[in-house]
Image (cartoon, rainbow, N blue to C red; front, side, top):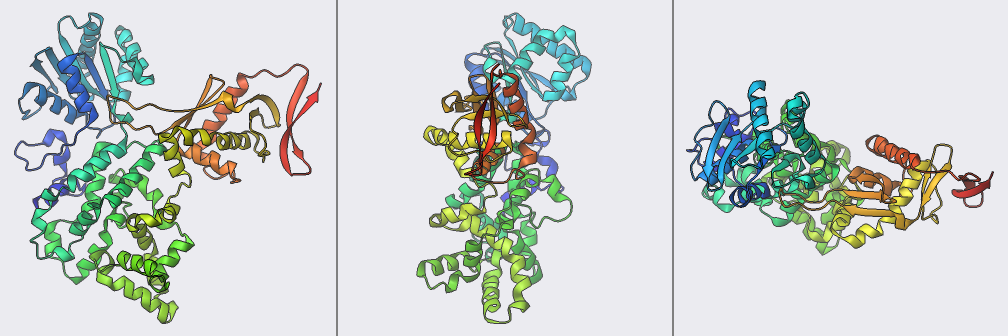
Length: 557
């Protein structure tokens, strides 16, 4: 038996051990205690040791606020926190003064909340002369609502609201950090790496059921740096979609990706029929919750996002042809790649599916077609994660967002960002006018539904930028900003980027329309409100009868 697999079972929401993942139930005697390096932990320790100030941490349930409070207490005192006091508040003396830690503001009564926040406000106003500093973990909604309801806390309310709008307004008296701003893919990468450490899996080497164990197979596959990077890439996709996944949700999800909800006991006692069921719990299926039973999928937070991004649902003819016929292509390299993909491991029932494909080709197709076609989504997922780097351009076709990789390149490379500006302008012109505008037009036209042009801006007046990295949290730029005439700004996450580039390439207005319509409509209206029509000349879009596209024309009044 592997005790680490038992540890992973704590993250199974249906397991009786599930409560142990919550910091309040962490025991000093636990064999495994979850820990990964994070910027916020290093930042807070440096802050309190070198230049202390009060800190408010906000975030969703599961973002790790309580764990951070515990870690900071233990690190600055050198003592283990065996149990949180019933009050949820404790003080720690350190070389720069005293740190008062409030592990969860939401657990306190209104009277206690008011007392603590009033004290915090006084400490800030007095420049922390008493050398008492606060570390408060709070829910954003609860905090802002409470502050707004008490006029005595007006100054603190102003400070907090200002910092929520822009983290750069933090100063030497108060630092607010919103853990919802953390880039989820960074934590996902560290968790996968930590859990794949070989010392966690040493017990599996001597196990008699090793060959029949899908958990061990998942570990071996996810230890492959290429496969691991592709798993993290899926989390990076969520980053770019503007979806925040909490630390707890990542832990629950990745535990299921490793084990499929199985334990060593279930693997050891498995008969043939059980092994057939276990084969459906390969990591590439677990990642999207494909065979998750009952209502469990809703509890595995990250899966509720990933199930809509499943590469197995996309049929690309060249990939499907390879999966069904790659072994008879006549090309040695293709045959070898097919053989490596359709191996003799448990996830493909020890070569059974490969033989099924062969029978499908040489016998009556109707007899085997349903079985094969039912497995195609599984084969595509396996291909998506396990095909080698030489097929990277083909593999990317299984990504549901066509321009995802270009979006990533734009975030990392200024030249790529500059090169995409023309297409974004074309996409905006198509969206604003709902017409096919001539590709020769390089300006951005602010046009209403009647094709009246309120204003036009040259490409030099349309500036692209990305959000900056941060020192206090683990953060990667995940959005682009379009600023027009140094005034009006549009936040561009992947859905808007994808929509505009598809329009620029001749795509339909309905694709992704629901996700972007309000945002782009508001952006256009803001630009119209700042424009001034010429008193004697009107500009309108009208169709060019020779080319069948719309061009701007001037009309003298």
